[in-house]
Image (cartoon, helix red, strand yellow):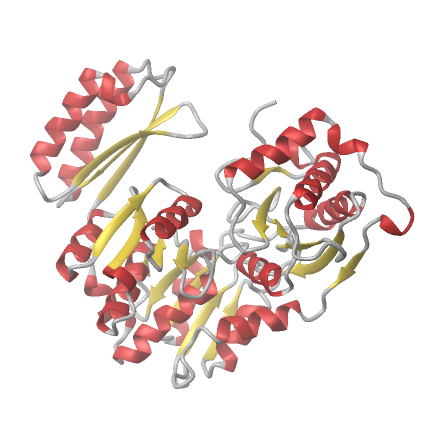
Length: 456
């Protein structure tokens, strides 16, 4: 059996492969078994696992399967219903549950679904625990445990989960600050933030215009949200808003639009927050963590500010791992995954938005002005199909092509060549001072990669 877990949990087409009701039930059973094997604060208290979801139609089916699997192992279930992924992580900690399971495929289309697992500490579980869950499923041993009578687990709904999360998010915004006078457009991606986000920003004083906040089970991420900002840009211009905020389907990503209708990447948002935190003396160790895919303009901006920048592999879990290793409190990805570790254990789009607004209000500047902290360098990404994946450093022709491009760019750009972790593909990325130079160098390297690795 191939590895069940990817870089962000289990994911696939709902009712097919790993995401059938039968398999999800087994994932629930195995997760419950792992929780039962962990040390617990009380020898008599019943174990509890939280389950939340986004707004996909398949969530109803998979929620019931997951709950049944967990209860069949003698573990109780707390059902939260639709709630952003970071809200489920928070509730897991708040209710002192043993684990929190999220049914979501994040920014993917509605046909997909997935499972993310948080430990009782609010952090995503490590690879070792994922491997333990998969081993239990493959061995079939998890089916041997069948409690009966009053030892069977019970499921109940937590009706105030949304209210708890709203208060949690609002508490990350300074008490002496207000959003009064600000006009904000929210694109909720017809996903998990559709209810909580408008309430949070309205209660903090903003005039809110919500779009894509009427989920029907199949419109999640459909030409909306953090990956599709056309509607958000149009609404910001139409309402003459101060800012537009776009979340993804499960609410752990944020992309912003300034008052002029210009889209800001996650790199922009991190740079703005980092600069403000540095000025206020809140940027612990004067360091931010991003991935190797962050724009070169971000690197240059941090150098100018004198902020140390650490880099991790692609994926928010690797960003967080690096943050913990270096005791950093701010990090994220260009895609909009932002982790504010002084407030939460995982990426949270709403909390990131509140910190961006905190910078706007604290500096009394428009977002377009704050975004000048960094200049986005032209970037060209070419995906090359390959038939083999030898270590790139051992392929002399590719290294020569990379060295030639790097020499041409000098200190005005960078080259990144890496294999895809999930496909037979090599990604060639070049960033440089001009579009023409960037595109030309990327094309040159891609041709060498294709020729050297048997491109198909």
